[in-house]
Image (tube, rainbow over all chains, first blue to last red; front, side, top):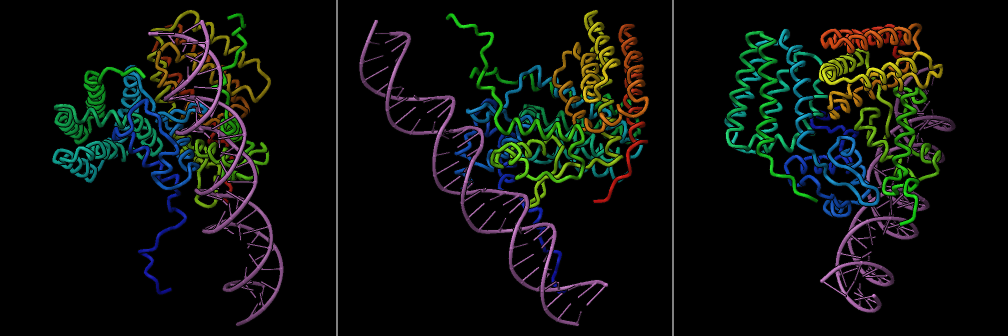
Length: 225
Length: 225
DNA sequence: ACTTGGGATATCGTAGACGATCTCATTCCT
DNA sequence: AGGAATGAGATCGTCTACGATATCCCAAGT
């Protein structure tokens, strides 16, 4: 067969309309375009993409299971509001999971891991596009958990973090938020290099919980709706 | 207003067709009626409920986000298969979360909690309807975490457990599975009564991981599909 | 000024339909 | 006998349409 198969797309994996809309809405919630409490008008989204509202509803049903939107019968979906106590709890679950992941990972870390993590630190530090900070932050964190060989654990961490994505972005933009994160990332990485599981876990826990603290101190008062 | 409002239903909360179908399919996966790898024919489910396939698809989209089914474009949804390594990982995440929950809960446990937990132990021990064992098992476990006042943590545990529900039911029906669980539940409860957080967490971790072991030892070999 | 009622419009949840894609069975060719 | 081609039927993804429900605005009544 004389075709250049390197350029061939697996059409079975081509995104459906509902996949595309799912990503769009999820990103819109994450970047704050869609604020908490805001209704998502199905017909409006459908018009935006020039499709019927069926794939919009399907995307929203998925987002409901992810905890990002909430359906009210005959009224449609609104972006979830997360109370401050619940934000704290989500950070806490994240801290529990991530400290365990890093402990499982450290014994298996390689020099390649350290170099990769450092590259993510550097990329994070030098990035000026605010929209990329959160992604690089995640890249750094997840790089540290890879050697645990625990994809389900990492996936669970990811799904918990996705609940917080919109707030994490806010926190990183706070004054000193990024510098603090950068400094703490490097400290965590040093503890990993030293194979000090307890120290790394401690630093990581403190890193996550102080990000939570900082965020909660700067959250605007909840607007009544 | 002279009406007896105790009997009034909040119609805004009445389940949609898609809600009802969601529950049906989720339960069918949990009780083994729908086996892993099995395709879920949208038209068949729609015919079963005498509805169009739109609410069926919506339910399936939600179940996809819950990890119970997987969509393949133009081929529909199949029940997820979980490999043995992944089962082990899911149990592990469960153990991490539940041991933390019980540690956070113990300092706040009341006599009422202990009595309730014991009642669930007794109910579990005497129940002969296999279909109820798993629910009572969850009731016991979640009762122990209530006093932690961490609804997000408990919800996360629940969602991880839901991934395993179909396998947990299998494990409880294994010879001695239920007796072992009952004995270990009571030991965990005793450690809670004694306010021994470390002991309770240890027993709980061992309880969960040995259930995992037992299950993996008895899983039928994966059938190729 | 405030409350109630009614009509118009917006939005939701889902039906039946349709084109695209997949799967299976049959036939033909080597 | 095995492989390829073709057609029919099954299934998927989404369309348009419709009835149900919610929301908003205006007018009338107190």
